[in-house]
Figure 1 (cartoon, rainbow, N blue to C red):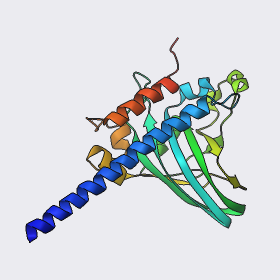
Figure 2: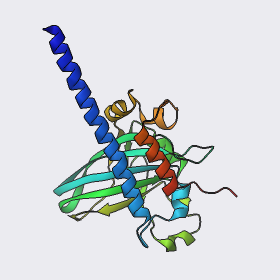
Figure 3: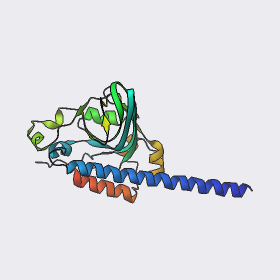
Length: 230
């Protein structure tokens, strides 16, 4: 009887783990779709000069915001950081985002959100177990379109730039107070170990990257290549 129960528990765990990995794979695919579509939006794309200088990128393919006077938000996404030597993006770490907002806001919406980390301070904030936008680090709405390319020293004007694409109707959207944390459960399901963001992005503890992660890295480096050295 105990053996039967053990087999059932093992099968249940495998089923849950397989579903979690499928969810992670989908998050990676959706994240690539978001950055691909934003980078290919006529006159609304992230300036190539800006994204080439970004030290790290965070992508939340479906951030849900809803509320009436008091709003709430939740989303799952990924982050990847450029290697200092090569400038190429590395293994993704999975994240969650949540928080409350106050003021005039009516309705609900789902948005795609991209955050570009531009400074060392912003990068250090990202590596914390919990990052609060607007408190731990400043976040600004990023410039868009080809005209922004001419801005002088554009990459040093903000710590983190945000780009969002709305899918619904909402008033009073703000990222201030948004809390970003490492999704250790998702990292465990994907890599087989409980990794924090720093373990993956800085410490190089990921030794084997699943195929979907390799495809994510390859495509991300194609869409957002590093700044060319003179």
